Amino acid sequence: MSHSNILKAAGFSASELSGGTLAVHSPVDGNEIARLKTHSTDDVEAMIGKGVAAFKSWRNTPAPQRGELVRLIGEELRAEKENLGRLVSLECGKIYQEGLGEVQEMIDICDFAVGLSRQLYGLTIASERPGHSMRETWHPLGLCGIITAFNFPVAPWCWNTALALVCGDPVIWKPSEKTPLAALATQKICERAMQKFGDAPAGLIQTIIGERDIGEVLTSNRDVAIISSTGSTRMGHAIGQKLAERFGRCILELGGNNAMIVAPSADLEMALRAIVFSAVGTAGQRCTTLRRLIVHEDIYDQLVPRLKSAYDGLPIGDPLDDGTLVGPLIDGDAFTGMERALEQVKADSGQVHGGGRALEGEYPAAYYATPAIAEMPGQTEIVRHETFAPILYVMKYRDFDDAIALQNGVPQGLSSCIFSTDLRETEEFLSATGSDCGSANVNIGPSGAEIGGAFGGEKDTGGGRESGSDAWKGYMRRQTNTINYSRELPLAQGIKFDI
Ligand code: NAD
Image (cartoon, rainbow, N blue to C red; front, side):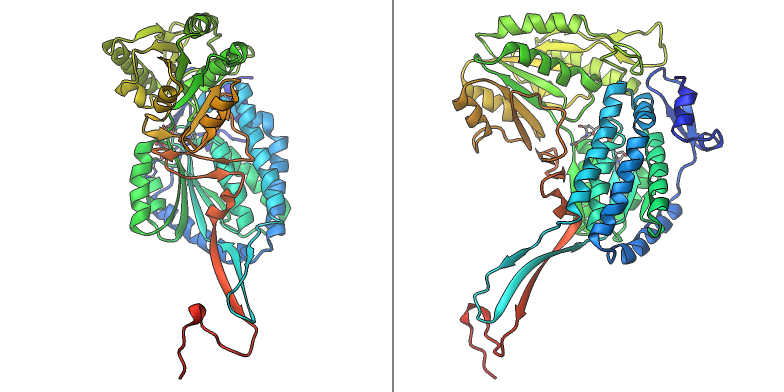
């Protein structure tokens, strides 16, 4: 399908794609595919006002009815899966299969949230006083601002939105300035679902288009009760401080630097497949991309040469073509970042296999890169840094404790894994003295999480949790209630205060 037909199939008219100042380029060939109108500060303030008004009625809509809207969004997403998946691929460069996978994640979290809308359980708590009862209840918190990164243009929005909506919170979305079209297409899908729903308040689901400054309008405004933000650790520092100043609720999903330990007992066939998928998938531009491989010295010479030959055969190309496994980097800055990191590897006495620009003749304005393996003498500073490109740092270990120390010896704490069939090792990896990451997997790579679990990470990854488990609590306020149904007024802790 031509690029213009992909845009048409996603519901865009020619006039919507022109006349503005925000140029959108496809990383597939580097060509401009849209010039969008952006929102001003005043526009955003007005939209925040609409969101706050929507909250006043949405919080009173029974949660299962709120779930019905999310069910309708999921239905529309099912119908639009291919069109939106293709647009995601065109706009951010991930292969079409991964574009489809991203939309599937949206559908999955909608299903999860629909079930949740009939739960949102609180607690009953034993009171120390006779004739008293205690309970804990959960109430909607307020308008939720969602800021997202270019590499997952739509799924993280949906992890937040599906939960926020059933929890009673309206949402306002600031997508990455590099991928606003997928956001606008998703907004259209939501508009259709809201029409079918009938009486959703205006301003319940809104999208703002612009750069970082527009995101700052959201983070500074006290009427935005929650900011859930996905992106770099640099962005998280800026937003976290803003939110702390006004005691706003903050969910931060920031950079990762994910490792795999490959132990001597590992099934190397499985490990090899997991390594390649998680290190080069999305051209190394996932927060959960495998970036560090920690291999036991006894199997290093069996695994690493096979890995290199697998890298040599990787099909790099147009992400919309069947058979492509590695698409382009998002832009020239990403490619420069990769080149700089590989220079540093050499300066650190590392050995580079692969790397460099690919398909330059065919796509002079796009940035395809050959994935690189960097064999390192140790965990140098460049290894500890997240370079958002397909570079896999490989290190040797001898003692298991050293492997864990390497795994944990970086500032980020998102995802981690071990390939081993030794129960003592795998359980230690999952224990309090094992991996310090938000996700720790056994015999599975670090990327491609399911929505049923809470997703997020520790340390410089920001500490936030989204998606499954009890992440919904991040979108609600907790209230403790004490009810006295007796005819006395005993005080807690047995305090006497007679008047
Ligand atoms: P980025 O930090 O450059 O931008 C992310 C978003 O934040 C964009 O929408 C941007 O406009 C906005 N933004 C930046 N500074 C801001 C500020 N001061 N105030 C308000 N908004 C601001 O990130 P990117 O390059 O788009 O994405 C790549 C990064 O995202 C990587 O570090 C990756 O690991 C991370 N990421 C993390 C997760 C996760 O769940 N942990 C998921 C995807 C991506």
